[in-house]
Image (cartoon, rainbow, N blue to C red):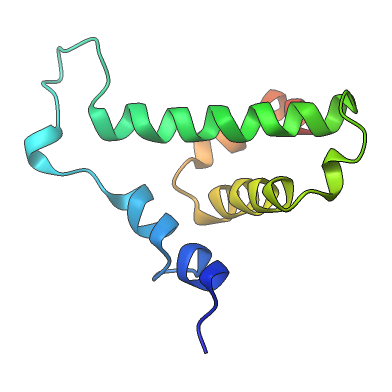
Length: 101
């Protein structure tokens, strides 16, 4: 039985993996365009949300937040993004990893 977690995060078939590959030709921008495409903007916003949640956990500003299911899913999201290889250049930077720890 496929769980909702697997449906979203499963390697190769999960919705998250499909979303990371999503880049329709009709939404691509010209190479000389300074604004990123809509798919790139959406992906960036998702990572910013995950980073904000991680900052809440790391700072311990809200006691008990580390036990929350949203936090658990966010951490899984970040680890899936790292393992996917789509943002290898970003996650290979020491500063990126340091900001997550």
